[in-house]
Length: 174
Image (tube, rainbow, N blue to C red):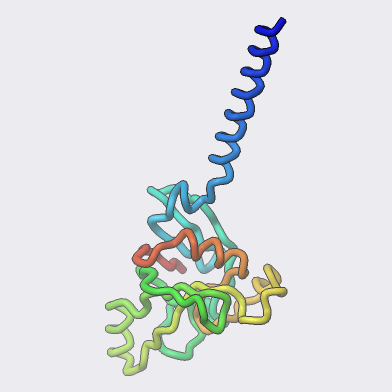
């Protein structure tokens, strides 16, 4: 009788240990399992995908600049740029709930601006909502409202902040 209790206890303990290990693995945040190696923004679809080895690991719905059609050509045109960029810095204390700076302007953007005789600007970010307006949440996506940036909810920028490293390349597509 005692040996069957011991086997039963042993079986239950192994089941508990197995459950704990599985729970631990499942609770490991996405960023610890696989960091994205690329960001793809699809302006027309209003989506941003975090990619790893060609596979989408997370997609976000986004809001863009107030004039979303076409590539950014100059400072103040309210357009979100199009082209190849990278995350080159971050600001935990911006006027928006966290922000990741996009390396706009790239060489092609600078050359286009030079030919047009205009200033490119450069404050293009992936960011959350303006400080104090986090309660708006996903409703911010009802219309494009930024000055050319890519906006997500505060909860989403928190996740993106943890997942995306400085130096992560990306592409903003029409």
